[in-house]
Image (tube, rainbow, N blue to C red; front, side, top):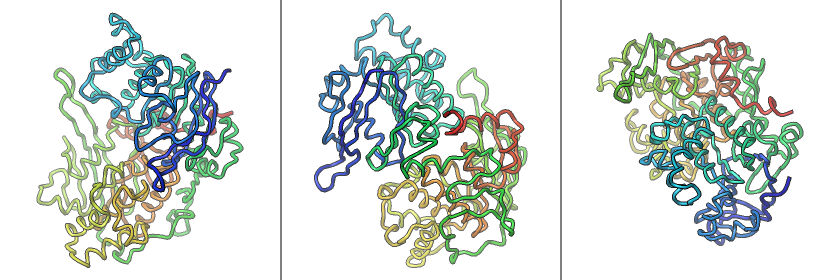
Length: 563
């Protein structure tokens, strides 16, 4: 193979002078024609900054301060906008992280292709429609999507459209920046299979940027590991898996396990099926349990009882059928229990959360929390329900107001639900910060969300949920957007809170590995129906339904396909 791209001592900074952040530091590597390379690292490692630099898409305050990016006879680092535009056709293309953000919501998919053809002039006008149809077919989409708008497509379909748009310029190098983030495991698996098959068929060189080492090891022939702006390890997928040389690589690998294994242990956790003498699982090596001076374990705990609940939405379009989001679902969440609700996107998980928090009303069935009829709840009693039942949302970045300090964010629910004011409310806020492991508490209380890491933001979201002294917490994908090294801390916190405060936990996720280590029981949802339920370890070790098996098979397993 011949060299397609050569990077020599590349450095990229954000800002200037003493305040500059050195995001990429003296990075050097080369890519061969037809090679599939993974670039893996956690948030802030510099991997996306490097990807944008390679494609000439870096925007201020990011700027290249040194080095070369040699692509053919051109140095990408020194090209102007006009030359970069010429380089796009037959050169370098990039598929961005969010399919929704990468597409114009008011333009049809067909017009997205037409815009590219018009801008570059490489397809004759009479072939625009046939070429667009050919490209969407390559990514296994029906040609009918061309007349749809981005908001009418699923996340996986939008990502496939983004790949097809990148292919329209027939690139020699494609950079995929977190192409499966926020997709469920089944869609993630399908999108990655499409990328792999396209790369093998079209023979372009590919860089897969991801924080998920499991996905990278299953897909790439070669893996580069990035940490604090530097490439700390570069080798074949086989060598990275079986004989990692850097401590950071070994740390990333330690956070992967097969949820079907007899015993599953992750950093910070031991297998929940391994019980202590008291009969309760304990987090292994976790940080000290949260303080509970502000609250004793409640003795008035209530069960959430869901009986034969269905939710049917009106037809999305004239002439189409109604949409059944939840179909005859029944379960009981006992006080202090942790129940996992798992399934792919569209399975009804989040709809159930909306129903049991009275955000929406069921079409049929009953929902009771203690003696409270949630399904028929009047607005005057919403405060009591929401005092007892709180949510932890998926995206810690969107869940917090960027203009409010942590103290202000926590003070509002403290005042609203507990009636505390002034110094009493402030002491309660500081106690909550101590409970979720954010200390020194005075320092964190004064911070704004952008001054916190992803894991710290999620801890603030959990503290806000605890402000009302809830009996039940609904955690909707609470770690899906966090790096692997941060996930264990948040999950251990939820586990400790459940044991120390007696809070019951409804854990909504498509991540069966995290469900295995933090929940007692599990329910598997498919198209709104419960297809399997039982003890978490028993269901995952011996699944009875084909859909559960598909979910398990779609989980990235670094050792499965690397020989």
